[in-house]
Image (tube, rainbow, N blue to C red; front, side, top):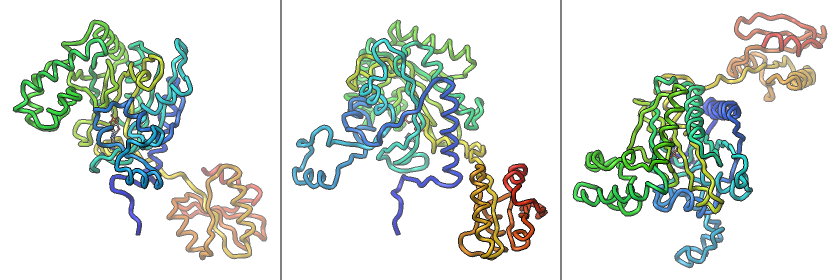
Length: 436
Ligand code: AMP
């Protein structure tokens, strides 16, 4: 028997309804903020992610699923390395959404120089070769937004406000959420800060783990995220970006906070919040549900250099992504039910084979009127059909037998009270609608 790959999930039943609900919430809410949906391919050239996410990130170095066709893989194994491959032959499954959306924006010139910003949202599966555990999957789902072409701090603030509204509409209360924000500086002030952190790590190298020593060279800010207790303790005394921002970044950050204050959004400033991807500049943010034990349920930030890295003209951007599976786990931990009820259904029961054509017509008429309905197609007895209707959660059963056909009526049976009434068969749709 085939088995799904560890760290992947089948979405069906109530879980699928939840995923659809999350997309409905996104479509509605993000629509009111002026965002349109986009879907980019799950497969992109590796370079799209390398340029966008950053060569030094764990996501690119360790977690991307690479894809080769069978024929290409044979060539590759024979050659022993990838050097003969053309860029378009080097493919990967997307580990996150931003790089692909930005690639598409550059390719289709969504934001002509000085033109109207592009505001896009997506709901897609992401793929990361991580060690599977609770809330950490190899194929998971994100809803995210990208706002390209707006440098104003109001865009950062609106994105954060929209994110917090989204969580509220998914069932979280503001009191349960912890929003952390920071500014990571920009091309003006971050390089010098990065050097300071690198030097700090090297000055404490005896107390830091191997990974952090490697990070010191390629991505020193990631040392703030190290899970190692020793590193964590050392990094508590590391220089903070908040003390090293240039004037423009400081002003931008102050304005973002002023907008959040004006909107009544509660946040905690965390000067060690650096996020895993290289592309962030200035504002970054992350949301957690304390005590839910699932880690961050979403995050994002500004990425003013990313469009250029993907080959476009300088274009500012800000966005976020939330994880569907983590949201579901967090809601469960809080005891909030996030599963929309199964849609109601009408069951049309058939007493005998002679009535089958009448049932056939009744089912078509109901569906034509947009009513979800079911009929037996396996030759069950009437009793078994009622059982089936119950199992499907049908609130109403239409019963059609020889007497009904003779009298030109149908019987409507309330599945809860078992009360029955007969109505003229040409009134079927109207009578069913009246009872829904
Ligand atoms: P990131 O792009 O890493 O900030 O991810 C954004 C959100 O996606 C996170 O806050 C999580 O909710 C979710 N997420 C990231 N990685 C995974 C994963 N491996 N499994 C499940 N959810 C994830």
